[in-house]
Length: 162
Image (cartoon, rainbow, N blue to C red):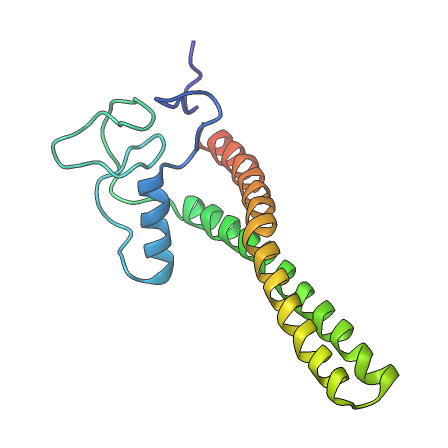
C-alpha cells in the first residue's frame, strides 16, 4: 500500500525523482526564462497539459497545483550547483596542475627553445586532459553527488508535506 505523499513512479525503480520535463522547466525558471506558473502534478510537480489530470510521471490523479513549491526549486538549484562544483573542480584542478608541471622545464632548465616548446606542449596536453576528465569523470561524479542530494532533500520535503 502506498503511503500518502510518497511518489510511485510510472517507470522502473531507481528512475528519476524529477521528470526530464520538470528539470528543463526548473532550469528555465532559475535562468529567468520561464515563470513558475502553470498546471503541475500535486505529487511530483511534473508539468501537465490542460486536458490531463493524471500524471504521466508518477501516475497520480488529482487536482493539479498552479506553481512548483519554492522548496522544490531550491532543491534543484542546490543539485545543479553541486554538479557544477565537481566539474569545475576537476577542470581548474587539472589546469592548475598543468601550469605547474609546464613551468618545471623553464624553472629547472632555463629559457631555451626546447623548454619553451615543452611549456606550451605540456600546457596544451594538460588542458585537453583536464577538459576530458571534467567532462567525463567530473560529470559522472557530479551527477551522482547531485542525485544523492536530490534524494535526501526530496525525502525531507515529502516528509514535511504530510
